[in-house]
Image 1 (cartoon, helix red, strand yellow):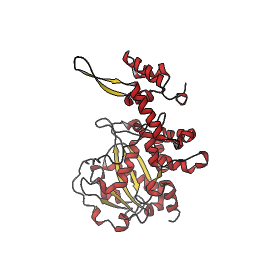
Image 2: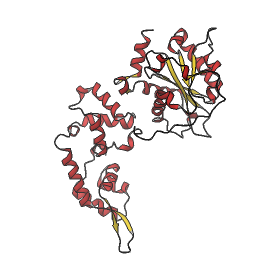
Image 3: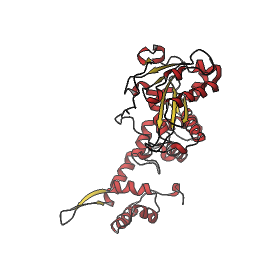
Image 4: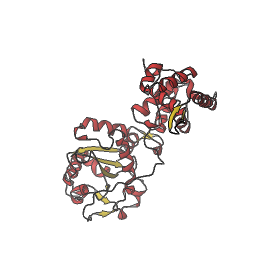
Length: 345
């Protein structure tokens, strides 16, 4: 039977759950016996969990069906008659699919839902959506399905340092680039696979104004491969390249050591772009790049060996990112804004 046919827990279900757990059945077995989704069983065990002290003074974790039922009723009371999504199964399924299957954040999923609002009988806000997830209102969607939360302490990775570059420092970068006033200024980074196993890496370019993303798979992490990738990009864009790629900001990683090669055009005598280098250990100076890399990691988790990843798979990730609705862009996608900007060049 499909998951959507599973019903919510009743008091009798909770009594049976208690009996089965005490008899030594695993949650997965209990889910089959009670005909409930496995996530419902785990959520129920958490709701009724308490520490029981045995006669020998040892403690063990047990499940209290009465306490679980009380909390469930309180939760329903708190939801009240105003629980909008309870009457709109289509909206609930739509949001679950976007967050779980398509790896959208709740905020982005709601933006997509609002684009098709005529399909649904109601609509909720982002705060309410997060609240529903926390309360376990969705059948399949839990906090485990969400991207890393914003308030988590940020960790900055240390990049392998090359010798000090003779290229332009970010300190000399024009204010127009810092303020994102015009298109054509990019941040560039590499995303690496499983350490000690993956030879290839992803070269990632993020346009600062529109957040448009370009992802290219490189055979290795050498500076020569980065230059070759930029050569291919220049040939692909032709004369448009010089207006679309005015500058590129990078860190001091060894793969970006050849600033002359990165700047040198393969089509004309003049240089094709200007390379700016961040300060050492200052990845926040490429903030757009870092945020985009997190989106890539939703599809390719850290520790993944992507030597076997095909160009088609990489293109699908790039396309997903560029069509993703962004709060910072007024819920437009990077693709929409990038194409509008290109039309003005």
